[in-house]
Length: 305
Image (cartoon, rainbow, N blue to C red; front, side, top):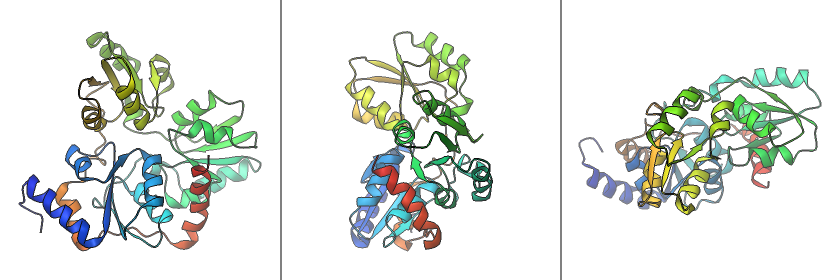
């Protein structure tokens, strides 16, 4: 249906279908610019989790990757949740399975399990509480247990450990985009833009975090760019965020820390896919209730922190 339409016609068709299907569109900050522009809500994982939980309408079109659409389905089980790019996955989420987490739990039976939201539904179901990059520290601090298993991101686990006296037991997963950043990338970017403030994501390596001026989730970075008196920024996260920063703070200059900061999975969603997903209400994401119920408890517990 949408094949061959230009951008203007696609926007018009998506808006028509959205009204017809009683749908809302959620898009992550890393999505293509034109996909962000058609969305009702654009944000990081925590913001989109909250939007999914409180969304009006009968249909949620999630422009992101698979674990995000699963989370929306868990939080809104009576709604139809569709993921336009069915093959869009998160490599870090695939670095741990529920069986592996159960084995780790058997080795540390007294530990609480904190699961980064960048994980599959069945891994969430084996966890005590979820977290996002923006609330990981607060989540860890909220726990009474002294030992904390943190899965799957070793870098976010290490960042959270800096701000607590708990024993953090990390899983050796990582984001293939953020983990590739090196201190050499930092030096090169600062050389190109000596007056710029360096903002990095907590999924980065410890030495990159140490070299940053500000560490935050994507939405935290956006707020910093928008509200800061500084005029130039080096951005240490996926380059899709630059579109949002340009819209929110057009008078500021934002440069990628590295041109290699591209998540191929986040770029799989296109406007024709969004239109087709709305028309067909497919590909649909459904999480079985036996997994959704314990996963929902972990997510809900996070949302109260």
